[in-house]
Structure formats: structure tokens, C-alpha cells
Image 1 (spheres, rainbow, N blue to C red):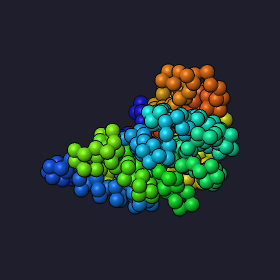
Image 2 (image 1 turned 135 degrees about the vertical axis):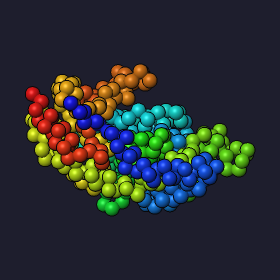
Image 3 (image 1 turned 90 degrees about the vertical axis):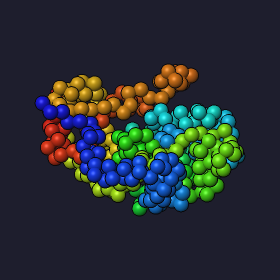
Image 4 (image 1 turned 120 degrees about the vertical axis):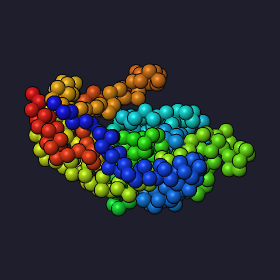
Length: 368
């Protein structure tokens, strides 16, 4: 039995093989591998795509969020001990970026239908030391709401987007990564726009923030061997920038294929044991992941594996139950815990065939 992969990265890369080899050869032959023309071109093109004035390439998505927060500290907008509101069911990187800066994450439960931060629960979590709301466009779905924006204005908070999973997602014509004051992006290979290795970016319309971020990411230096800050070594390399430039041209087309698959799943998965995602706005989701729920999640996963369908759990343990944050282990966040106990990710990617999609549907519907 041939397995339907959760994501066939070899097949994804093969689509661009000739162009990738061409741009990689160009970079290799140039003799310039960091902070060069390829990165500059990609940063401009990515900023234009997102719809912002500034893009700074960094080493990965975690660094993107970490450096945004550090820049705000250096700007005097935040200081150690200040609080950042963040969804409780996010990937751990969102939390690490906060605690690495000695800021305090304030966990807010998600909406059980959308899996995005519940904007009705945010205001009660705002305190005198709250300085920002970090929304996470989880699974590829836009988490921004007008209520979140209104709360930021009312309480003078920064709005930070964790856009690691939602590149290309749009809300009323505006692209995620341009909705807040700053955004962190990930180009991890499995993302909708993935590098052939790690990579990330920061986008913003704030020129001062952009300057601080670029300086911090380069050891804290604007002038060689002159250091304003105790910075980081976090830079998008030339080969990854060139490869991302190739793939960026096809991103909207790739996201459209993901949406086609998602629509097929939603129409044809009829097993009453399966809770399907709720989609209110098709433009506002790029289906980085197609996540279903079942109270018999583990049995379902084993059944699908036995029937040649690879699945993953995003994510089995919520941040507040991790050993890394043992001080939180006694917290009760029942919606988050329910989500983490029940979610299962089905295969979805731009390179899946119609036959593979139908195989997934048939297997899910045959689960008893």
C-alpha cells in the first residue's frame, strides 16, 4: 500500500528543481553568501507581497518574534516583567519568544470552533503591565478581529502577529503580516512558503522598529565592529533568500490548491465522529494545516495509519503542560486542553493528487 504523506517535501521541491538549481548556482558563483543582493531583492519582494514598507530577513521564525520583542524593549516600549497576551494553544515558539526577553506570557483560551484566540476573553486578561497582544494565525487561519484592534487602541497596546503558518492569508484584501504593528514569519521547509532549511522574516511599517530589528539581528551592529547592543546572529542567507524568491512567485497558486483540497474535505468527509474546521471566510485561511477533531483521536490516527494515510498531531501537549514551563503545569485551561487532546492533522499540500485526496476522505469516512 502506497502511503499518502502528510507533506511530500521532495515532490514540492521537485516542482521548482530547475529554477532552484539555477539560483543556487548563481549564489555559489557570486562568492557572496550573507547580507547580499539576493536577500535584498527577496526582502523587497516579500515586503511588497505582504503590503508593508519594511522586511528584514532573519534565521528562523522564533528569532523573528524574539527580535521584535527585544527591539521594543530597546525602544523603551516594553521592559522586563511586562506582559504579552498570547493564545494558550499556540506552538511553543510564541511563548519562548516572550520568556526569552524576560517578558511574561498571559495565556488566553481560544475559540473552540476557529482555534484562534477568543477575543471575548482578552480584555479580562489586560492588566497594568500589559504591553502587547500577540495573535497567532494558527493552522493558516487569520486570527485578527476588529475587537482585537479596538482593544489595542483602547489600552495602547502593540499588536504583534505570529504569521509563521499563514503566509498569503488575506482579510478584506489585506495580507496577514501587515495587520498589526509588526509580524514574525517562518520559512521552515514545511510552511506554505518554505525554504530548503531554516529562515524567517520580520515585517513592519515602523521605520524605527525596522532599524532596531536589523541592527539587533546583525550582532547589534550597523557599522562593522561597532556594536550598539548585545545582539544576535540571525540572518537569512543568500541561497535561502534566492530559493524563497523562486517559490514566492507561485505562492498564491499553491494556496489556491490547498483551498481546493480543503473544500473537498469539508464537502465529502461525512463521518459523524469527525469535527471539521469552521471556515467563515475562505480568503482568511491558507490551510497550512487541515485540522480535524475527534474524541477518539488516537484510534482514528492508528486506523488511518493502517490504511496508508499519514497524519500528525499539532500539538499533543499544550505549552502550559510542558516541563519547560513547569510553573504553569497546574493551570486549568480546559478549552486548550480539549483541543490538544482531540486534534489530528490530515494531509494537505499543493502537490497532492485528486486520487490521494479521495483516499484520505474514504479512509476517514470508513473509521468506525
